[in-house]
Amino acid sequence: MTQSGTTPTMGIEEEYLLVDPGTGELVPDNDIQRDVIERVKASVGEGVGFATPEFLRAQVEIGTAVCTSMPHLRDCLARLRGAVSTAANHHGLAIVAASTHPTAIARSVKHTKADRYNTLEHDLQEVARRMVICGMHVHVGIADPEHRIDLLGQVSYFLPHLLVLSTSSPFWEGHDTGLKCYRLSVFDELPRTGLPERFDSWPDYERHLNALVAAGAIEDSSKIWWDIRPSGNFPTLEMRIADVCTRMNDGITVAAYYVCLLSMLQRLRRANQRWRTYSNLLIDENRWRAQRYGADEGLIDFGITARVPYKDLLGELVDMVMPDAEAMGCVDEIMHAYTILERGTSADVQRTVYNQALAEGDSNAEALKKVVDWLIEATIEDI
Image (cartoon, rainbow, N blue to C red; front, top):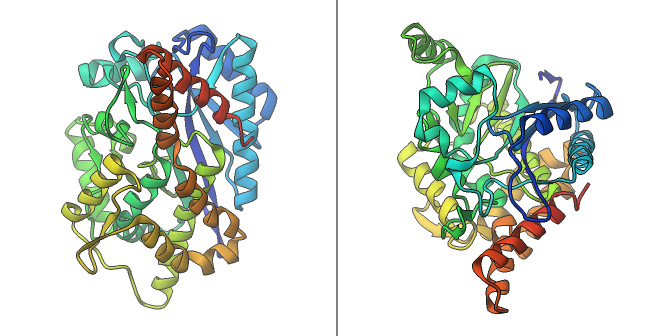
């Protein structure tokens, strides 16, 4: 994934869960997982993207081809979601795009049988056994590694703003966690996660990375799991903070904001300007607020050191990236963020479905099953 002229290339990776629509429970079966992946490969081809196993046997990862526009990205993602759904249906199963499963018990979910995942489970132990989580990663091509490092330090400020729009993990092991994004609480137990370090240059980044590799702590940069990182496989800057969006159009909106924010920061660079750098201490506070409250309690504007309603901050973001959105033809995707705020993210809707079911007299288990039913329906709604 590289950058051609002024048009950035882009790609999305998403992780889905395989569930039994009758019970709503995960189906951790290596044979089914492999067959689903083979069926996806046979139906879409490399020009659309790929499907691979993930850490859980009840999990499938997809990645789009390298895309040159938002419509291209949406088309590839829709075809991949549809192909995974169709392949799962062949086995009487459905797919769910959510960053946690409402009822799965982490210790009972088995990991995929493969050397990579066996090693991961051995190294991380109980931490790995809690990883019943899914995410969405967005790649944007940045050909110059020095630009990648420069943008890494600037765009990190906006990561909590992107997380707010994507939250889909309010439930864990059969109860409401009180958070909009519980996935990050699980993921942060891993080493080398959270906000990225600050680096002065690409060689500075490589020195730190090579120190860990030389010491035998990690094999390569793929074991650095920051919220955003330089990809080890492509010349891209990979955004990883987002929950996987249940509704596909919401995910495309998050991707559009990320692409446009990087474009905006590069416009500033060409004008010999840059976004102010804030400490991780401050950005982490907004990261937590996004995890806990989503859009409900606003984020902190550190320029004025005050909490600001998220809708107001979104308006500022729209103004900042609109020239880039217009140039790339993704104004509709940018404006869709207001729709997300009005009807809620996946986390908001899941909680509404759950509370309504309880109010109608359903048991906790029955209410959670209705949440899974909604997730199954909404995962393929926008395809």
